[in-house]
Image (tube, rainbow, N blue to C red; front, top):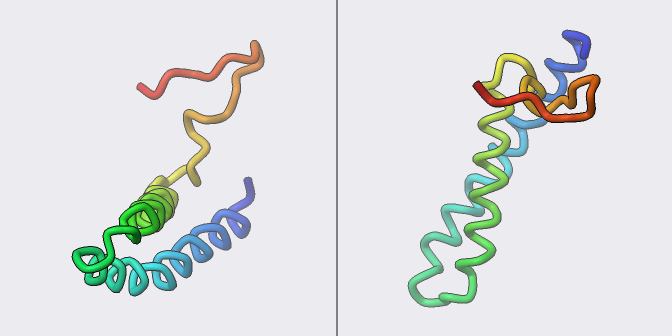
Length: 77
């Protein structure tokens, strides 16, 4: 992955967090009176968490996810 592509994906992840965070806040506020939004709030929270992980992961989120030549996935540690 080139540096410019990595920078672009980090920026996309930041934009996604900025876009979704206010919606998550509104759903948190609405959840007590509309319990049906709980699943949507959790889904948005998971997307935000993944985007934050992508932003903070110095390798662009591919350090342990890339398959090895043997086809297996390397361990996290």
